[in-house]
Amino acid sequence: MSAPIEDYALIGDCETAALVSRDGSIDWLPVPRFDSHACFAALLGTEDHGFWRLRPVGEVTEVRRQYRGDTLVLETEFTTPEGAVRLVDWMPVRDGLLSVNRLVVGVRGRVEMAMDLSIRFVYGSAVPWVHRVDEGLLAVAGPDALLLRTPVGTHGEGLRTVARFVVEEGAEVPFVLSWFPSNESPPPALDVATSLQETERWWQEWGARCGYHGPWRGPVIRSFITLKALTYAPTGGIVAAPTTSLPEQIGGARNWDYRYCWLRDATFALYALVTGGYFEEMRAWEDWLLRAVAGAPSQVAIMYGLAGERMLTEYEAPWLPGYEGSQPVRIGNAAYAQRQLDVFGEVMDSLHTARQAGLGHSDDAWHLQRALMDYLERIWRQPDYGIWEVRGKPRHFTYSKVMAWVAFDRAVKACELHGLDGPVDRWRTLRDQVHQEVCERGYNPATGTFTQSYDSTELDASLLLIPLVGFLPATDSRMRRTIEAIQRDLTRDGFVYRYRTESGVDGLPAGEGAFLACTLWLADNLILLGDKPAAREIFRRVLGVANDVGLLAEEFDVVARRQVGNFPQAFSHVGLVNTARNLAAPGGPAERRPT
Image (tube, rainbow, N blue to C red; front, side, top):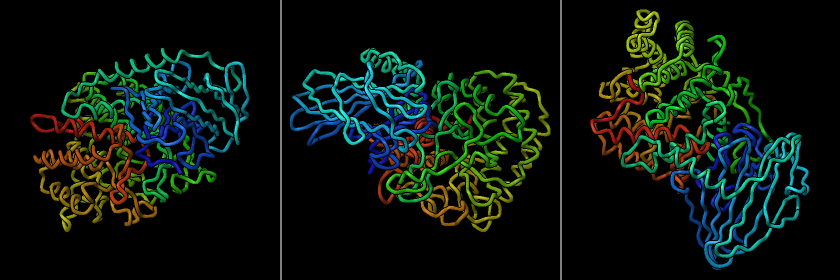
């Protein structure tokens, strides 16, 4: 069985990522991209599906780990009766070479170590051909090859590669595992010490650019580093998470592949990055967006592959038993074909944010926005599948319509504030029409609240975004009652659920954890209502469920007291950054999106 989700740490090279357990085992690694087949997939099955462990032989009395300062270099220190060793894990920011580097350092005494390596390509289904070459130990299966270089002697044992070695105080033993296409020659060896120094310096320099200097700087910078690690450097796309099928409920079926670029998630992440002073990521994403959505506006998708791929066909991997038996394991994501009206507002707002931040604009970006607005004018009255990508029937989701309002509002502001050319009078009229319709049909006088969809009684935590996008103030009596209802009916032990899954609206079996981003949206609303102490308590509660290296999954199981869902999750870390900034604002919070 794989470790608890919160027992994993992230390392990556801004093109793919690995998850390392407290036990020193890498149980997840897709190669060569985030969305590629994994060569270690024990996270979703057993050791038979691939892993790479380095740890002491025998008893371990204590495990401590941390990132080296503001970097993505992970240190795990094992204490044993015989002494202590430190395992340093990192992936150099890629310059043509994909490698996972591990360095065992003797800290005290004399400790016997074990290495166990089980390479299984294609999500644990392909056992490679392994043999020795001059450069090291080579594993090949189909298009993929991995080369292990280490001074330690290894041998085969039951379709695994194993080693035993002793580390004394001051000694350093390196292990470098490099991926390359199997039809090419192995890459040259790298200098491990230089690689470590350069990787550490790269992340330190990136983290030092952070413009947040409030009381929670540590968690905020860790969140920024996590968001950067989820950015696919060659294109500027941002993945929602580096994993697939980590369940929203242990043993449940809500298991999705998040290794793609959602327009919504990316715009949330970019807003946080821009407010933190990371403008290069905004420019790179805008370029990615223009390439990804090129074509007819009617063909704009809610999500794309890392390079803008449009076909993200979903299938199941029946040979994987799933994380703690949570099935099915899904590869790909069928939601790519859904219509979700809110993404038009998210894209318009993201580019508005860039202009407000002084990043300028390109003619191509405005041409894209004009085309999106022309299309939205024709479809905004249609039902959609909503922010939560329900797999039930489409509905008139209130948040989707609110974001259609945001799209028209930001189009108007592009003309008013930045002198861009467009049918501003028509957009103003449409903005008012959407606002009136939402207030009439998305609000239920009987319950005194806004509702999940038109003419319904169900609540939805996405309604907490209404004040944050400028649609209505949090102090509006309708919004205040909605906030109170969400606190009463969708909140448990201080954590907020997205909606009542037992209502059947999403076409899936009921049951999931509390959503961490929604919990932080509640804190933001309480700040807008002037209750910073209550908001601060919620924020501290969320910080309290982050793992020992500051990472958050998508959700939190308030009964089992453990993290659930894909990990680490961009949405959760974006919420952390924004709420920290709002709490630190001396005159009250800024809106999540400047208006």
